[in-house]
Amino acid sequence: MITGDNPLTAAVIAREAGVDDFLAEAKPKDKMDLIKREQAKGKLVAMTGDGTNDAPALAQADVGVAMNSGTQAARKPATWSTSTPIRPSSLRSSRSASNC
Image 1 (cartoon, rainbow, N blue to C red):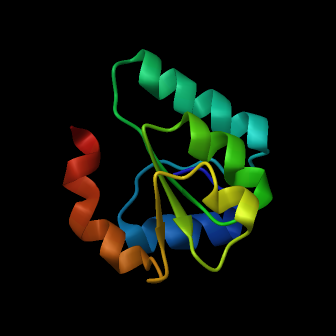
Image 2: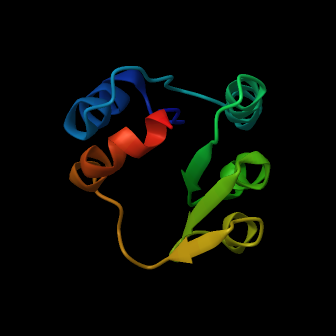
Image 3: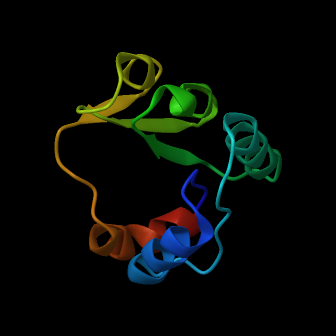
């Protein structure tokens, strides 16, 4: 998980979602770099975002999911936009899919 949130908030969200590793206080370039590194390893990468700072990473990801309540800049490059809130508990059930 990569987020612009502070480390304490990121740790709580990661723990609730069952995520073992996270990067906090990430800038837009950090998000892009991480996505590119994972793609270079042959991984399929999904990115969820809601802000203008997420737009480059949403565009780079293989699947980009933008929150419908987010900025237009985030929704435009996304593959998909949702008005349904994504909760940490919903990520837990899909975690095994991220290991593909």
